[in-house]
Amino acid sequence: MKNHNSSHGFTLVEVVVVIGIMTLFAAMVFRVFSASGAGQQRAATDLQMQSKVLNSQNRIVRIVREGTDFIIPGLGEETPALFFTDNENNIQVLYQLKDAELSKSTGKKLYKLMHYQVNAKDFNIGSPVFDPKMSSLIAEYIKEIRFRVSSANTVNVTACYATGHTEFQTMFEVGLQNSGALE
Amino acid sequence: MQSGLSIVAGHESTRAVRRGYVFPLILFATLAVAGFILTLSQFQSANRVKFQHLNDYQSAFNIGYSALVEVLADIQKKQWSNRSFKSGPKDKSANLFGGSFNLRVEDYDVAAFLFNVRVRVTYKSKNHLFYWRIKYNPNLLDFTNLFVPICYEDLQNNTSASSDDIDTLVDKILENRVANRDKARQIADNLKPSPTIADALKKVGINPGAPPGKDSDVPRPAPQPVVIPPAALDLKELAELVAAPDPEVTFAIKNFHFGGNVSVLTDQQKELLDALAKVLKDRPSLKIELRGHTTGVVGTPESNMKFSIERAQNVADYLISNGISADRLTVKGYGQTKLIASNDTEAGETKNRRVEFVLTNDPA
Image 1 (cartoon, rainbow over the protein chains, first blue to last red):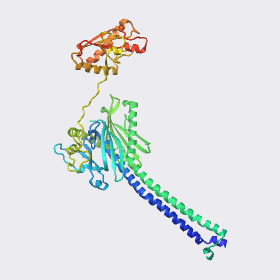
Image 2 (cartoon, each protein chain N blue to C red):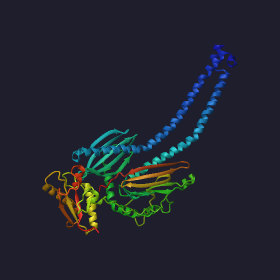
Image 3 (cartoon, rainbow over the protein chains, first blue to last red):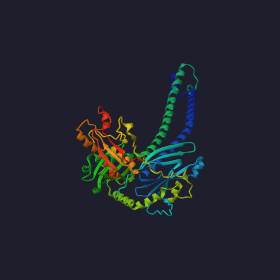
Image 4 (cartoon, rainbow over the protein chains, first blue to last red):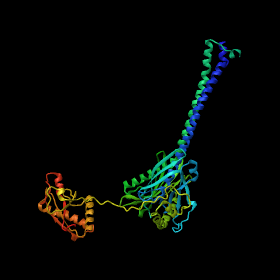
C-alpha cells in the first residue's frame, strides 16, 4: 500500500490543495502586478518625459556651443528667447511658439521651443522673410523657458516642462566654445 | 489506480501528502519570483539604456575636450618653440573615461601661431570628430582665441582623424565668417535695441501671425549704462590718520604707503592715484604739492632727502602720465625730518614711508 501510493502520482487531496494554493498565489501576484501596473505606467511616462527633457537639454547645449556672441538677452538680462551669432556669423534664434494642441489636451498653457537660423548673406534687414526650412523643433511640453546671459560667453537656461499631471524643471549652463574670432 | 484515489487515513498518508506538494510548490514559487524579478529588471535596464544613450554625446565631448586640454597644457609647459608638433603632425591615442580618443595636432599657419586639433572620439560604438582651430597668443602665453568651427558626429565611414577635407571645410566656414561679419553686425545692432522679444522675432522674419511665445510681449529693460564704481579713494583729514599731522598738510591718501627702501609704485597705489587723477581732472583749478617722506631708520639724512623726493617724483610722474599737466604739481622731499609716527614699530615705520599732498589751491 505504502509503496503503491508513493509510486503512483498524487492523491485527490494533493491535487486539490496544490490547485488551491496555485490559485491563491496567482491571485496575489495578479493583484500586486495590477496595482503596480498603474503606478508603473505613470512612472514610465514620467521617465519618458525626463528623457525628453534631457534630450532637449542636449540639443540646446549643442546649438549654443557653436555660438560666438550673444545678441539677446544682454548681459545679466533674462528673456524667453535667445539670439546669438554662430561660428559662420549667421544668426541663430531659440524661441517659443504656443502649442495649441498640447495646451488643449493637458489643460495647461504649453509651448514649443523652436530653432531658427538666419543666413546673414541672404538676409534682408528691411524686409525679413521667414524661411520655414531653417526652422526646426527643439522641444515640446514647455511651460516656461528662460535664458539668462551671465557672462560674455555663458548662458543659464531655466526651463519648466509640464505634462497633464507632473512638472519637470531643469537648469543648466552652456558656455560658448568660441572665444574670439580667428580672422 | 484504486488506491491512488482512495482517501486514506493514518500517518503514512500524511507523509505522502507532504511529499506530494513540496515539489510543485517550490517549482511554482521559483517561477513566480524569477518572472517578477525579470520583469522589473527589464523595465529598469530599458530606461537606464535610454538615459545613457542621451548622454553619450556629452560624454564623447568630455573625452574630446579633455584630450584638447592636455595638448594645450603641454604647449604651455614646453613653450611654443618646443611644442611637440613642431616638426610635423603629432598623433596620440588613449583610452579615457570609458571611451577612447585619437588625436592629431598640427601646425596650420606657423607665422600666425595657428594650429589645428582634431579629436576623434569613440564612445559606446559611436564616433565623433571634434575640431578646434586654435591661435596661440605669444604675448599673453595663452590661447585667447579658441574656436570650435565644427564638430562632426557619427563619422562611421571616415576612419582617419587626419583627413584633409575637414581642413578645407573649416577654411570655408572661416571664409564665410569673414564674409558675413559686417552683415551679422548690422543684424545684431538692429536686434539689440528691440523693445520686446516679439519685436526682435519679427525683425528676423519669424512669423508675426504665429501664436506668440510666453512673455514675448513683455518689455525688455532699457540698456543700463555700465557703471564701474570708482576706486575707493579715501580722502581724509590727515588728523584722522596720524597722531601729529603737519599743520600745513591738508590731505593724505589713506593707505598710500611704500615698502621699506621702495620708491616704485605698486598696482594698488596706481589705482588710488587713478582716482586722484580723476579728482584733479574734475577740478581744473586744483593744484597740489606732493611731499615725500622716509623713516630715517636707514641711510643718511642726505640720502633720505633724495629718496623722499624720488618717491614724490614717482607719484607726480604717474599723475602726469595720466594726463595731469605738470604745472599743477609741485614735488618736495622732506627726508626723515617730518616723522608722523614712531619708528619703533613696524606700523609706525610704514606710516612714515609716505607721500602726502597739500592743496595749494582751495578745492572749492
